[in-house]
View 1: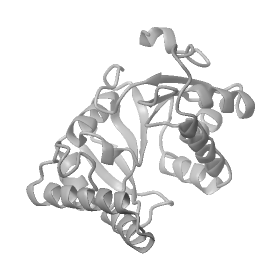
View 2: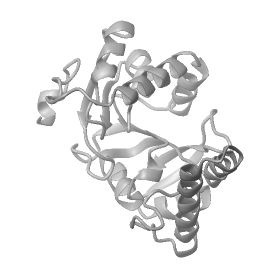
View 3: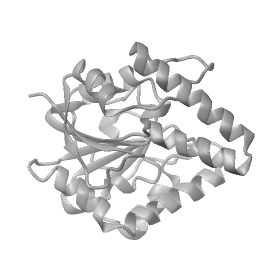
View 4: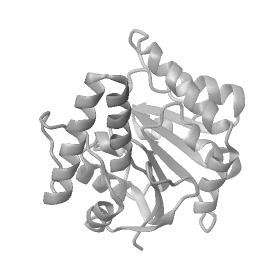
Length: 246
């Protein structure tokens, strides 16, 4: 679908194909409810962007698109939610119709490494707990390209403690598959930090953890600078406010 056909429309057309991923749809409903039940999360996003006008906002790895809510309701922005899930937008359209029917929100399917938007199109780009599954340099390059100068990138990452906690819980419960997964990611993330080159092979893992130190190095290549952290930041999943250089 062409971008011009999306702008100003309440939602995009249904994605054609068989209905799948019922578990995923349940998951994104739960995530919507968590966001709606915690006003501080919306408040944190608004506080991080209080010094700027927000006309267009993108959520990469959007799920049901709940992270768009404060921008499309409080600021009247045009929202875009993007996800690789085959059923992207199905739950989101339902939830917005029920809870924010006047919001202008569009959903489309795609990955973080290839954003189908013009340069400097967005004032804000959101990405929460998606970065570990992407090619980081390509994802950062695309965010920098579509973000306007002075725009903000609200990024939440899975730090090393996330996977150490997974490994600890897996050992405690005897879950071998989770032990293997956490170990592989920890090895990949360690290699990434040592070499500053992200492993992109199945062995040890394409998934990896990040850190503030590594982010600062990677972001600088693309004219992006960490300004601070949002109110929901914690040692397990740090959250950053990142600004594109003017």
